[in-house]
Image (spheres, helix red, strand yellow):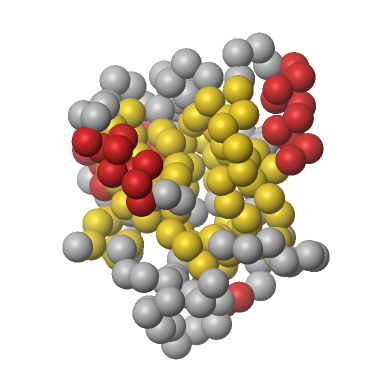
Length: 183
């Protein structure tokens, strides 16, 4: 099954977006003509008009969210993921909360399925692929936080600032690693 990465934004906000197709292929069975470094793309965090957080690695989707829907890019430090599967990588799934424009990212198939089965979330596709294991000097740990049906991703130092200075946020745990460099 394939899903356009920008499908949720298009459906949720009535926009007509056309992007590349994200697949649910296994990271270990897919092959790519380009190296993992050539496939790296920056992850962006945007805040929605509903106060939720939205993540994309697609430049056109980011621009559409800003220009058509008035969302804004945050200053949260984010790094790089791969747009294609690679050995040692795992898919990151993006889901939209059905009640408002608030998004959650998970690397767990069982969490994704549980959230979709609850009827409260819509699966939007694969955000990208992240290293499953840390690699000193090559990767950065990313944590997920939650607060009243809002979810955020943050590097360790920013996670600590959010927890210390923004009441209500709780640490869900480490979600993934991201590449520290573009390629």
